[in-house]
Length: 126
Image (cartoon, rainbow, N blue to C red; front, side):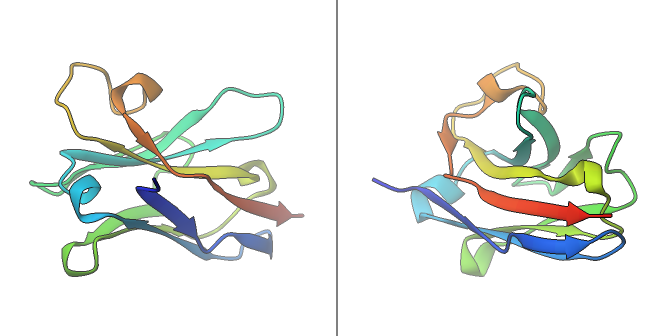
């Protein structure tokens, strides 16, 4: 059973842009928190951005502040991540995640989320 499906990844030169999309099943989209994570080879999964779905409050990792924007389209049950001014260090597999049960974990912690997509690869060349 698939709850989250990412798309929009690809290869781009440094300084370029990509927009990732995460299509969510209706149930999953009733999550109270949704986020984007990334994982590069040999590294831990890292929180990129998150959104408190009912209030629209957003959170960003320090490395992407001012370059990435998380947003949601409730009518389409879709979460987005607009990525501008991409750098080679942004290269990673990007995952969409949803939290359907309130908990005290931080937005950047993987154990906050109980649903995950399969990921979409982003590769940035210098």
